[in-house]
Image 1 (tube, rainbow, N blue to C red):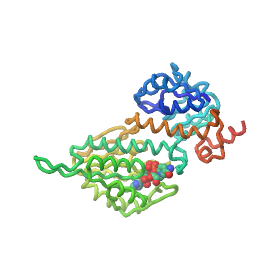
Image 2 (cartoon, rainbow, N blue to C red):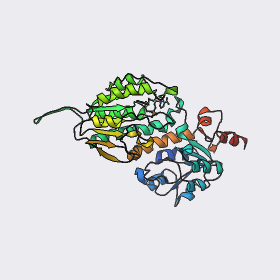
Image 3 (cartoon, rainbow, N blue to C red):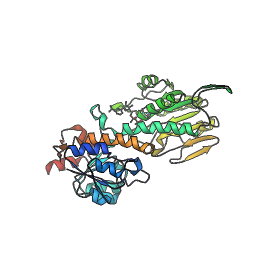
Image 4 (cartoon, rainbow, N blue to C red):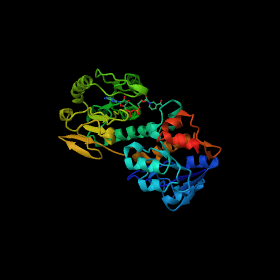
Length: 368
Ligand code: NAD
């Protein structure tokens, strides 16, 4: 099989879906790997490192992907990139085909076998392929570092000749993969950490990281280990208690999400107004609209003395390690598609059947 990897088309994307480590493994398994020159620049991986790992370096994106049976990417390729793929080629990456009509059409028009990794069922077997988890870990880590950077305070308690400094109080809303990494990171920096989630099982997870579970009187476990949306009454109760609590929080990190929906609005403008001047909000959910009403995605603003940051591309800020994990996830997923070096998806495998988009692509592919 020929595998093609071109530079990402999304603006500002620094991560890559192939590293020298995974390139070497693909080559060892009999694949030919074509890489566009400069592919790894954003993640500080040189062309020479890819060449040493057995890749053939080519001068432009079209030369990397045309003729390739398998194309790897991090973020969705733009429409012109999709046009340069061979009809019937398989594509693995975070493709979000439903988010953009033109992209979805280009995928169907080219008869591509698209595997949007965000659709991967989150079963135990899929964990090694789960890019949402691996990238959320980096995002949670970076969000806390941004909070520490913006805060006019220390995180740890300090006993100095100039007196004692009390530790910062950090609250993390949403204790999924990103939130738990945020809690662990804030704890390592010495803050007094609290976490909150609507899934009751997160209490134990937060406590095991040295955080305190913040009781807001709402529990909303949904299907498949995810949260469900709250009822109006539940939301009102959560907000009343949270607003009161936020008056004593120095750094708030928001990570709450409900699959397939805009981020839940949890922190109202009134709650922000009630926070102490100098406190900081880092809204990791900014990408899907934000958990805080005052968040402006991609910007950091001063809201009456409270700094509100809505950073985008958090995982991309840690491009080297994020790519290392992303590329391993992609390599592990690709193993489901390849049999003795050739593209031969087993459609009885639920991980493939549930990830492929559109769903009928599998049936059509099986028929050819
Ligand atoms: P996510 O990004 O969809 O959501 C982040 C968190 O926000 C979740 O913990 C959710 O409960 C929480 N949340 C939603 N609405 C909220 C509200 N109103 N207030 C407070 N918190 C709210 O989730 P994720 O991090 O991708 O995954 C969540 C969970 O899914 C994991 O912790 C795990 O239990 C499960 N999971 C399982 C696997 C696996 O087994 N392969 C892989 C990944 C995740």
